[in-house]
Length: 234
Image (cartoon, rainbow, N blue to C red; front, side, top):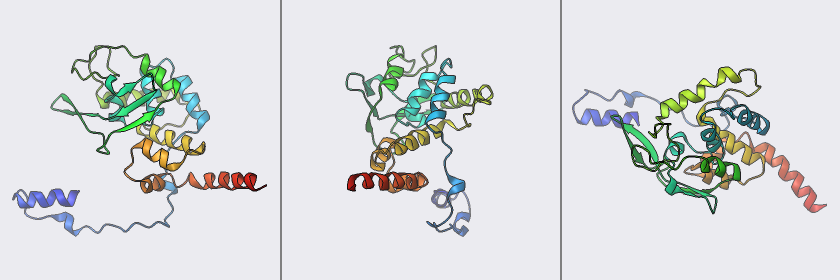
């Protein structure tokens, strides 16, 4: 991406040369130890403990919806009432906000395509608790600030970070807001949900991408598979 951007700058005579052409990109080594790059996550007990301890937080429902369908932060803040089907328990991920010059604009999700997800009852309840007000930008957003304006992504992240001093002794490891997606994925994989389904819920472009990120979870699943086939053949 950087090489392409600098090449455009050279074409427009903004810079004399593209220094990125000198860079040597390392080749991917599938045998390399990925232990240091594993995304931080929580197990089921830690997740339940976090939800219990954050029950009184202003954005508790937002945290609950982040964990339920495993949404990215822009997808979470771009949820509209028109994307929610409460009777069928489904959510359509179709928009993500960006702020340009102080103006909120809704664009496509990161994957470039929409996806429809089923929701658990607790996630549906967290959405249903939100007031049916018209946000100040007229987008019909589910989550808004008390003055009905959209939540700026940076402020939501600050609120997430701000709760950790209070949770320091809770036994819940500190993770980034984006890592709630990893929590969602690892909990599903631990429950035996097929990786194809997990990949679709996360909005990954390919299953291979999901397998690369969560390769450390798959050996445990293989042990469960061996036990399952043992039961089937005995």
